[in-house]
Length: 232
Image (cartoon, rainbow, N blue to C red; front, side):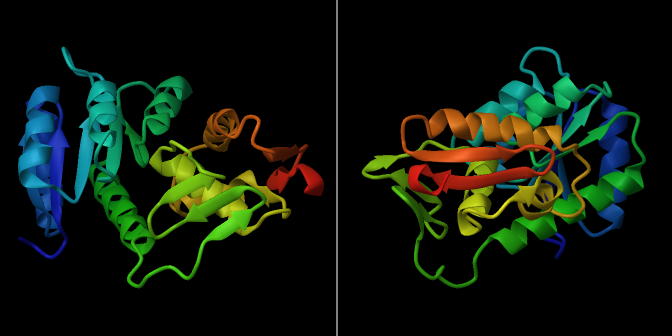
């Protein structure tokens, strides 16, 4: 396998699969393809790609459905392809666990750049050595090595980016982080999403922290900080 890694391209448009494959292969990637959602699920399970380029608007099983099913048991990085420059489409895809997005029609060189950037972030997020200890804020305990978060004895069910966002806030408990800082720390400096993405993920985290004594506090005009009751 080429050193760059293996990329699965999922799109019902043969021309897009061919164009994306050509440019990624030129850059040293091993490329596999799927023309629909069910085939994508099968190829992910069988081939274990390093990254998936996933079209959202496919007939039958949509890219949203594929993303949801993949995220049930895998953290493989996903770059979405969307035919509409619509914030709602992008936010829904990111909520489901995608790592970045690209709007069609796209420059194939930009696709290669996005793939490389997401893979760099994914590699950097994988600890080479055991993490030192557990981050605690009040009753909240976050184990970054195990990627587990607990409120007392209760484990929180967090999606990938929800966990990363909560961990970033916990590591800086009581300190206000701007939306731009959170985008940089959680999604990476080359993430092209808008700060609304942070707001959406904060809403989900707040729901999961309900009645825990831990809160993600909005600092109007600045950003967010994590606090527990006595610190608010």
